[in-house]
Image 1 (spheres, rainbow, N blue to C red):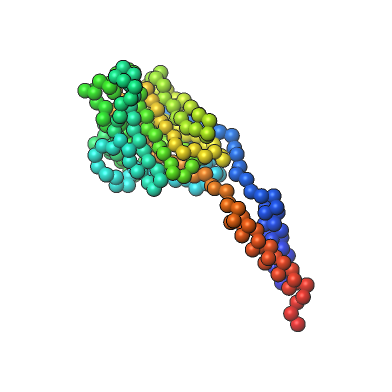
Image 2: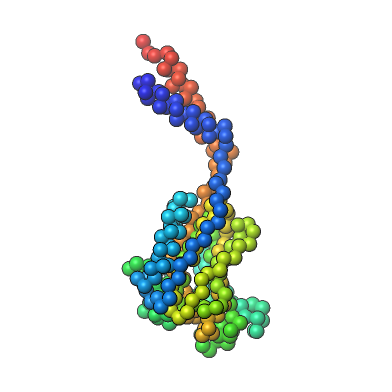
Length: 274
């Protein structure tokens, strides 16, 4: 009985210490994770990218539960400019081209290895899966997307803020063209993705503990082949939500209940039943 009371008292004082000191969200430095494999035609031929993904998962897992979209779930068929991928998570595709005006909309589809754009230039990375997301409104007959001035953007928007993000990208690669992950935390952040030649598979991601990020954009200039369709596709998108701090009311309840229980147990320990 005394050991039980002592243990309860110890736990109670720990909670009391938390209440007196308050709570705060841990702010960690940004860490970026990248890995690229040239001549990649499947996940099995992407050891460097897989190693980067494993490192990201180990670091992101310390921030909270990992969430994943692998595009294997059934989605509406056809082209989409914007699509709800999961509750609170939306993907939007855009293409811009300064030669044809400041703004041009694009669309994307959830394609498979069997029906994809330029297999094996683009391919699925989910073990046992076959689907991924990629642009489909651009083709060799679409001057907007085949010009060297074309730029593609995939934007993931989150209703709940996130603090870590990562994904696989496959395709021709962009040679020396610009490719980057951009987000606000709240200051604008732009992180270049690694370049590559033909047949590339890469992982890109970051952790930003304590940041409240509402959207992440993957942007890329046209490939050296001037066709955004086979330049890149996305798969196995993963993230970690920002854990909200307790509200003042919940913090009061969390603090009050253990303290009351602690006081009662101490009273009983000093006045044992006869």
